[in-house]
Image 1 (cartoon, one colour):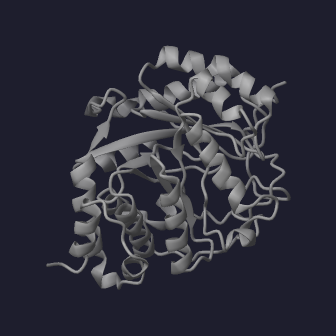
Image 2 (image 1 turned 120 degrees about the vertical axis):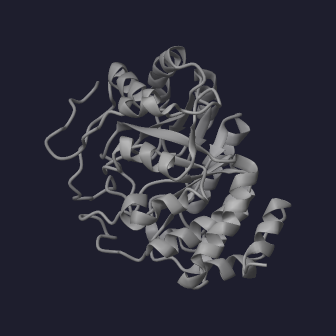
Image 3 (image 1 turned 180 degrees about the horizontal axis):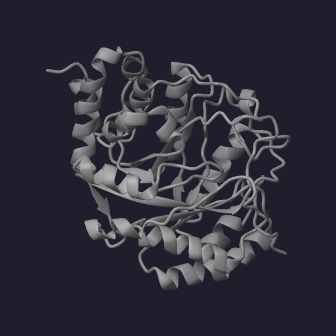
Length: 353
């Protein structure tokens, strides 16, 4: 029996792993990485077969954020070279959504920078979401707008939003080291509000912030307590102009161990490979597909990702199929529908009143 098979057996029985067992994954040798991935693949294959769900980010509002999250290029005081703009116009949002859906995304994630939405912000999204649902039946809409105020989750659900993302990012104990303008419990409360309103809860973490193995285990434990439907795993992109610039604390093998631990904690939950995968996993990205069952297609919020067509080719070449909005698979001929999106200085969009 391989080293990590007993842990996979527990996960397949949906039994929670002990702290020591999770630490044994995170502290294991690079020589054991294939065994760890193979164990996680047994779990992934049981619940998700060889399907990969594609998600597409639409950045509704970029920069201009009053929060001081140290990892974020949009933070208060950031001098990172990013595009800054207020809310996209509805037609711009719908065009971006269509780009992702036509390329195979079955979930679109509408993201806006800031502490949280005003009631007016929630109202402005209603007609846009209605149009998206009309044009793309079956596609999930996930909102990521920051901390929610009372009643806003219910209003988003009524507007047609299916899911709400708000990441815990790191452990409770370490949270004050990465943000001082809000706390860990604020994030927990927002995820709970979304869940109580009937929105599918989406919450994950960011690795590479200087956290310890214990922090990773603590963060996974807190996430498990929220019972999310999807768990995105991000890897720090250390933007110049932010406090964490130059923090390169991850190796491809470290990233894989974190993904394996996440899969074993969440055997039947969507585990999403998210921001930073290209620069940290690099050539081992296809190996990560044997652990996760979901990825973001193309670009992220303020950074360019791998070209969308390259994502689809990677999935195909690794022997996986894309989960379409109708639970089918994406035919190879749709590869050419992926359109590039460009981000960077000099491409600022006009403000929207």
